[in-house]
Length: 294
Ligand SMILES: Nc1ncnc2c1ncn2[C@@H]1O[C@H](COP(=O)(O)OP(=O)(O)OP(=O)(O)O)[C@@H](O)[C@H]1O
Ligand SMILES: [Mg+2]
Image 1 (spheres, protein in one colour):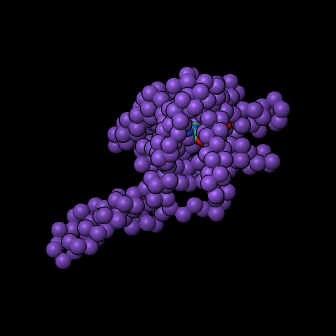
Image 2 (cartoon, protein in one colour):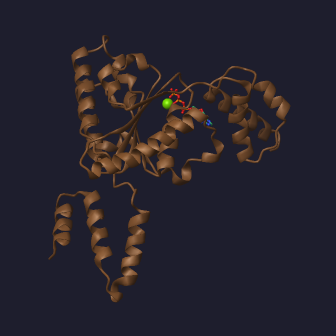
Image 3 (cartoon, helix red, strand yellow):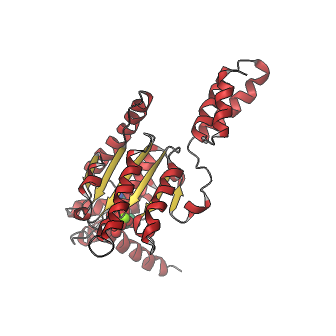
C-alpha cells in the first residue's frame, strides 16, 4: 500500500469527502497502465462532472437550508445586472480563486460579501447569480427561519449548517441576517448576543472554499463586529432611471421572444419602482395578455 492509498483510506474513515475526491484523483492520474486507461478516463470525467455535486443533506440540517445546483435553473439571460453589480460579482469570482491560492499556503481567508438595500432590489437574486457564475452549489440559509421559537437552539442550528457545508465548495447565502439583530432589546439580549458570537466563530473557522454572501435590508441592525467579517459590502439599489427600468423588462421579454410596444413600455418605466415591482407588474400584464388568447 502506498501513501496515496493510505491517505485515501484515512479520508474514507474520517468521512472527508473533499480529501476522498483529491486522493482518488491522484490514484487515477498515477495509473498509466493501458488495461485501466478506459476506466481511468471515465472515472476522471465522472469526478470532474460531479466535483460540485452536493452530498446528501443530513436529516437535522434538511429543514434549515435549501441546496440548489443553478447551472440549469438560473435563467441568466432573463436577468439584467447593472455595471456596479457585475463589477462586484467579478470581484467575488476573483477572490474565490485568490482564496484557493491562499489555502494552498495555509492562510485563512473568507471570501465574503454583504449585500444590503431595500426590499425587492435583487439581493437574493444577486447571491444566486454569484453561485451561478462561480459554478458552485448554492446553499441558502434564511435567518428568519433558523431563529426558532426556542432561542436556545438557534446557535446549535447555525453550527449544524456550518458543520455540514465546511467540506463543500459552495456559495452559502446568509439571508435576512438582520433577523438576529432585530431581536435585540426585545427578546433575551444575552441569548441573541451569544447567537451573533456563535455565528462569528463559525465564520472565523470556515475553510477558504466556502464563499459567503450575506443579505439584509436593515444593515443598521447588524452587529459591527459581525459586519467586519464581510470583506466586501455592496448596496443594492432600485433602478434610478426610466432607461434602467426598461432594461429589466426588455431583457426578460426579449429572452422569451415576446413582441412588445416599446413606447408603451417606456411610458410604464417612467414610474419609480423596485426590481421586484417591475417584474411582478410585467408578469401580471403578461398573464392578462395570455388569458385573452385561451
Ligand atoms: N437583476 C435582476 N434582473 C431581473 N429581475 C430581477 C433582478 N433582481 C431582482 N429581480 C426581480 O425582483 C424580484 C425580487 O428580487 P429579490 O428577491 O432578489 O430581492 P431582495 O432584495 O432579496 O428582496 P427582499 O429584501 O425582500 O428579500 C426577483 O424575484 C426578480 O423577479
Ligand atoms: Mg431577499
